[in-house]
Amino acid sequence: MAVVKIDTLSRSVAEGPSLMTGSIPRRDWKDMPVQFKPGNYAYPAKSEIIAYLDSQPGLNLPNARDWSPEDDDWKLPEDWKETIINGLAERLDKFRSLKIFMDCCVRCGACADKCHFFLGTGDPKNMPVMRAELLRSIYRQEFTLAGKLLGKMAGGREMTVGVLKEWFMYAYQCTECRRCSVFCPYGIDTAEITMMLRELLHLVGCGINWAMEPVANSNRTGNHMGLTPQAFKGNVDFLCEDIEGLTGITVNPTFNRKGAEVLFITPSADVFAEPGLFTCMGYLLLFEAIGLDYTWSTYSSEGGNFGLFTSNEVMKKLNGKMYAEAKRLGVKWILGGECGHMWRVVHQYMDTMNGPADFLEVPKSPITGTVFDNAASTKMVHISEFTADLIKNKKIKFDKSRNSHVKATFHDSCNPARAMGLLDEPRYILDHVLDEWHEMPENTIREKTFCCGSGTALNTDEIMELRMRSGLPRANAVKHVFDKHAVNTLATVCAIDRATLTTLMDYWVPEVTVAGITELVGNALVVEGEKRQELDEGLRTLVF
Ligand code: SF4
Ligand code: SF4
Image (tube, rainbow, N blue to C red; front, side, top):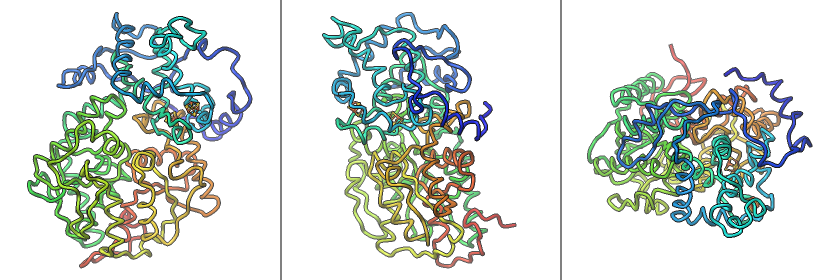
């Protein structure tokens, strides 16, 4: 899809019809059907992908077929309505949080203007309270006495194909970032409501390909791209050759090695795509510098878990693979790389889905002796926690001048920030590897961070204008520090962010590039025996 030009989009964002500009819809929201047109929806999952996943043990993903959201007939199963209502009943019974979220919203509106999709599109149905209402209205009609007796007067409505289509539109215009929940006095987590909407849609075969193809690949070969074990190892080997060329350090990582102390798992994007590759070089150099006894796995070769964007059962299955591999290899604990949603799954869901992982040990750094009690159940430590601890205990040395080409700002990735509270460790690392970095405005960082706009499998080109709109609040904050301090680098700890923010910056603030925190660590790290060249761009420097 062609992306609208920046001057046109920025003008239409500011002047186009929306509540933000005073244009009030004339009809009740329930009377405004969604209209699918090229550019406002992500492509549906391919039928062969759904058929494959449905055939897998523990998964239920029915109704594989070719279809398009633009078609009138979505080729739903005959009993689709019954399936949806029964599915909702089952989930209300299973998840107490869902029942509470359905009942306790007081419509105070505190969340309304906190969503980047609402800010970027001006579409009232992108207000979190409205997004939830899409489901809540059905809940009221079907599961409350008032709704059963009074219907519309009690805020209920019939479940129709039109409602289902509306769910599909707005469940995939939410990145499950949870920013709205920070501002809700009742702690209503709209991301969890979106997750339920997506689960219900999958019961009748309505999912998107950008989520389901990575899920299928992860299940089959271990990672989103479907890299074979040989290709995965080959890519890491290439990076080791680059490290040797740039620094004179020979790195010899091991793969699938039984008895290693630590299993290292990172998003596969770190291994095959820029700018993640440079972060991966940072990991390799760091582990070599401290002599860590670790192994990669070519089977559990993906930290990302697109099950979070699909359904609880898919999330559980993909998460289970990491722990099965840790058990098979006999490691003591797991070290995790720079990923966003992997950490939400590990911190918020793993324990009740697959845990506690009592066959592993409570993680203890073999270099500093620090015991990571915060990971006592999951047995999994974030690379930023691990690195910050190395710095605090003076186990690694840096030469900040090697990052003199970098003037950074830091983007808190939604999941590490809001789902695991990883707020200070990346900042502590930046203090030690950079001479200068600057915070974005207070209401756009830490727990209140703005989403990249393309997470939860929305990082797909056919909705590029939507992505540029929803990423606008984040881009605007970066523009602020670019104008004020001339920052040139947006540092982050998430693989999806590194991909999505690169596109977003290219569009809104092209002077700013995106880098992982561990890339900046690798740039500045002083390693014994190195013969490092003058590297103008750190580990990105091309040496001929
Ligand atoms: S802030 Fe919470 S209670 Fe208020 S409208 Fe939003 S979801 Fe409802
Ligand atoms: S979770 Fe994020 S994307 Fe979804 S409604 Fe809330 S603020 Fe918007």
